[in-house]
Image (cartoon, rainbow, N blue to C red):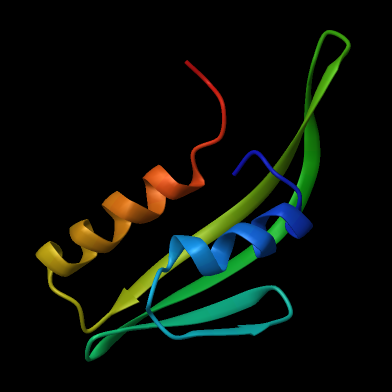
Length: 87
């Protein structure tokens, strides 16, 4: 993710919509129906291109007890919500 942790944490509640979100240091759990999504993240060194520096956050997603359709539906909204800028 191209953001700092503070931004990630401010966007996360909106990205998961009505699903219950439980946060702890460097990780979160999202209840999705009878399944769940486990998120873990860590800050990476910024990517530097010439004089520009871009923040980076490594995020892992692990779905449990959700079929492909439920995962796709959740991630479609999540991805759109997390998009910032660009063209």
